[in-house]
Image (cartoon, rainbow, N blue to C red; front, side):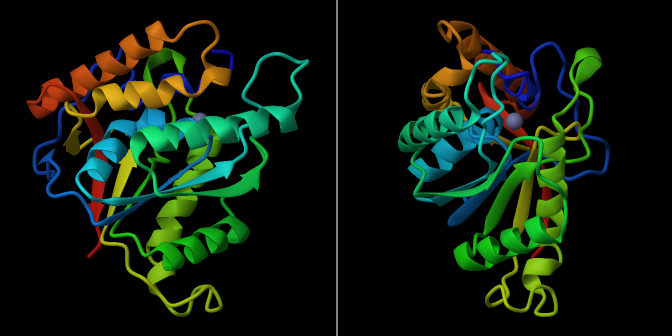
Length: 260
Ligand SMILES: [Zn+2]
């Protein structure tokens, strides 16, 4: 695949048993699909890996799905001869193709080069502005507290930077008129679903959308190298493990935060 490891960060990644919910934490299958959803991720393939089944399933149930990609994906190759801006252009087309599979209504690109995004006022302000514009009932994003997945994978810093910024943009900034007052009318997001988490407490049944998720991932040809059969297996295995915890065939796991 040659992108330095984004795809391995898929939620409950293969090789690591999903952790069961702790005593006293809310847990179980998520309820009715949110009416409008905004997924905010770092790299072009991240939403599909992290929550592609959820996006597809909710979109098929009538949710309006919006996706924001913060980085351009231009460093997603281990080949030193690859031109970053051409790769970024190619990945944009891959996202458009995968979005058609998943049922995404709209994509937003913030255009930061990979590895050059920071959890700072600028990013938070742009996210607050987008959240106030889209007004999503639910926001999907990476869990920034996850640093290590098992003994051999360090979560990409871009995932963590975006995750922290999303948390602060959603609570309290987007809902408070005193934060970023020129970024539009305030809006309170009702719930946050954090993927790639080490502390899942909510599962979305993706049994009906696992094939769509695999088809969406297959659109990211720049990341797949030759053939994508292994990926289908990894995706299926991760979803199966999460499904075992949730009591369904295939699932995606989240830490859910209910804000309103
Ligand atoms: Zn990534």
